[in-house]
Image 1 (cartoon, rainbow, N blue to C red):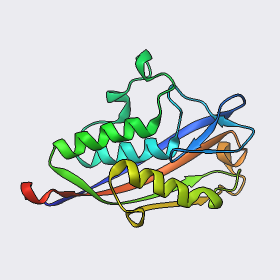
Image 2 (image 1 turned 180 degrees about the vertical axis):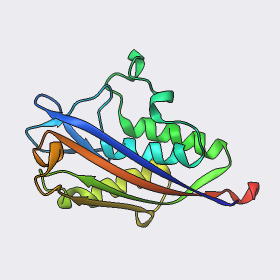
Image 3 (image 1 turned 90 degrees about the vertical axis):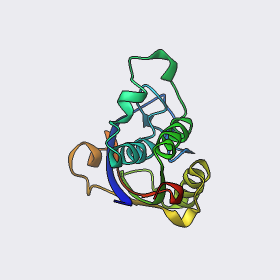
Length: 163
């Protein structure tokens, strides 16, 4: 098989005193995401989709919250490490599609910057990185602005030398 599809999901609680980082972009907001690393749910969902496509586990296996070296880690650095794992297995990303679910802040003004940062780290064109944003229509923890969720799907292709 010359292609693999992976699905990723992440959720983090919103709290005061933390920056809001999504897709490697710091977004002005009174709340930020709580987590061991920078809690970038979008980047985490993408990493899990990449790993899942190759049955390599999840990000908790490679960057466990119990390991102090990952405390406050920049998720874009972790994304680069996951991309190296994928490439070492003989695969590369064809495209990514993702969605961030948040009531606030409005993410549309930041999406192009997110796409650019993610593409740069992964060695892709921004046209290969889809990022969408939606709300949860005020339903559940996301709708009450207690959390932000991200979903991602990644299509991996076998590198031509390994085909």
